[in-house]
Amino acid sequence: MMSDNKVERLLEELQIMNPAGYELVQAARQVVYSVVPNASERVMYGGFMFSGGEQFCGVFAYKEHVSVEFGRGCDLQDPHGVLEGSGKLRRHIKLFTPTDIKAKFLELYVDAAHRQCDIFS
Image (cartoon, rainbow, N blue to C red; front, side, top):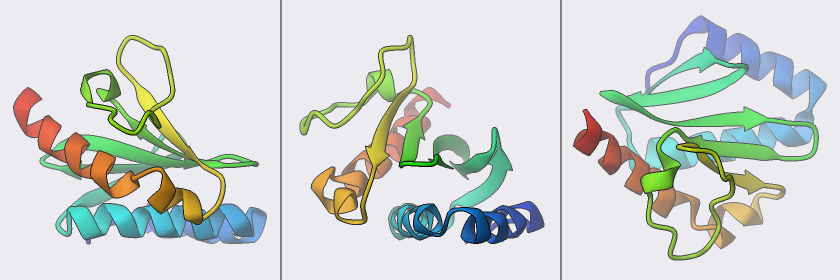
């Protein structure tokens, strides 16, 4: 797990401003690191961007949910029908509660996105 000081500062701010969002972000980050233990993360676009060679996903906290976003989500298989978004490339999974992490198969999608970045690099 590689991160920088900006990651720690954003986590601290999130814990104060949005405790429920903080817990959900931490749970999503844990999934990312369980799938890609050597991932690096940095703060970009107000959230946490993860790379494993190439950037493969981001975790963003909003007032009512946490979004896990995939830059090339349009190319991901979606066997469980949980990817949202209709843009040219990006897709995301919205998490409202910790149970959504398993219910929406987050680990499967993070793994697919990480493997996909090898294809496009």
